[in-house]
Image (spheres, rainbow, N blue to C red):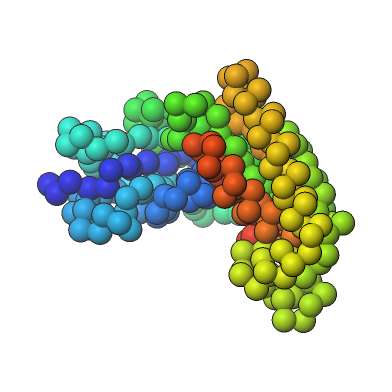
Length: 293
């Protein structure tokens, strides 16, 4: 078998438990994510990613209940083969208590993948639990999301795959105040007092990641001053968090729509903080909604 990617993470677990959120969190870390890959295709997938080492340097694969029972052993055998070939390979299993899963499916009106004409939801959940038990037993880590929000789950996933020697991960999160204030940030900064590119016709449809928006913002001394002040503040206090053996520090930066000013500041500060800190992540909370504007 050809040697595959250097870093492979298998994400499995109960439907409705948060596997998609886990894969999104891995994507933020630079993983090439593939969801619902049939287990029978894994032996052929190894040589494919070996032939594209730059694209598939880090790979995360979602395996769920739609995989046939006979293919689950293929998954476990493939992981064993990777490890025998010196490849870093982990299995993350996401689950939740049955009443929580029932409530989530009822609220979202999603159909459980194992629910057929002759099966009720509670039976489908039990069948899925039994089907995935071999993966559950072999998991490197099991995360129960019954009392976990999506932001906490993202942190747990990041910690699972990317704990560095420093033990500290810095997360810069942009957000829109009009969509609500995030509840899990350690520091919060308000960029609404800065000039807003939204009111410039040629910049309105762009984001804070676009060069035209960056140049426009940087032409104002207030933007440069806020960037510098936040950077100096964090450089002063982040070592204290590191000395206290904190795993994560989340810095929230908000503006009105979460599209221009907060995004610019998060990206800019990430670049600055990365010079002194090993593990800096950026998450733009409103990013999924931009495609719908």
